[in-house]
Amino acid sequence: MANDPRKEVDVYPISCYYFGSKEAIVSKDETPSDRLKRMESNYAAHGLRTSVEAVLLVELLKHPHLLLLQAKNSIFNLPGGRLRPGESDIDGLTRKLSRKLSASEDGDEKEWEVGECLGMWWRYDFETLLCPYLPASVRKPKECTKLFLVRLPESRKFIVPENLKLLAVPLSQVHENPKTYGPIISGVPQLLSEYSINIVHI
Image (cartoon, rainbow, N blue to C red; front, side, top):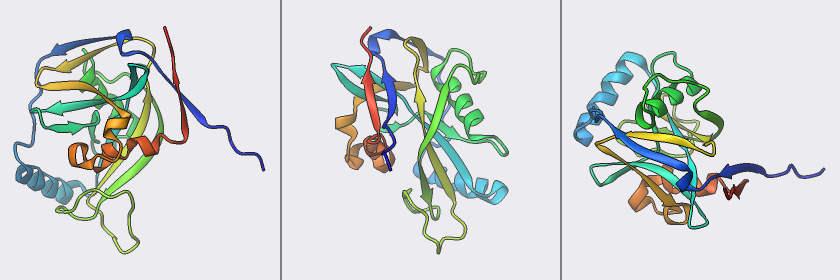
C-alpha cells in the first residue's frame, strides 16, 4: 500500500505582517493559587474545562518560527483560551484569536483558517501538569487542551493587547525545551514532523 503524501503548510515571511497594539486585557489569574481556585469553581459549575490553542507559523531568517504570546516577561502561551459552555472548538478558537490578535473582538470564521487538531493534552486533577495522554484509570479529568494548526494568509494585521507581547520563536529553540516554554509548546515541533513546511518567498 502506498504511503500517504506528507501534509503541507505554507509559511510566509514575518515581514508580510503588520504588528500593532490595542487596549490591555485584564488577566483573570494573578497567581497560580488564584488559577487553581478558579479551575475548581469552574469544574464544580461546568465540569471538564476545555481549552483550544493555535499553532501559527511565520518565516524569519529562512527558518520557521512559532508565534507565542508572553505575559509579564515570563510566561509563554500559544494564542487561545478556554471554551464557553456549549461552544465548538472552531468557534471558541476563532473568538479567542480575534480577542488577542485582531483589532475587532468579533470572531469571524473567515478571518482565521482553523485546520486540523494536532494533539490533545489532559490534566488528571487540579494539581498535576498537563499530559499528552489520558490513562483508562482516570474517569473524571479536570481539563483538556487541544492544539490546532491555523494557517496564516500571506498578509494580515496582528493587533495585540498592550500588556502582552507577540513573539516569533524558532521551532529549533522551543524543541524539547520545557523548562522555558512548558511541555505543550516544547512538543509542537514533534507534532509538526508529519508536515512539509513550505517557506514561501514573496
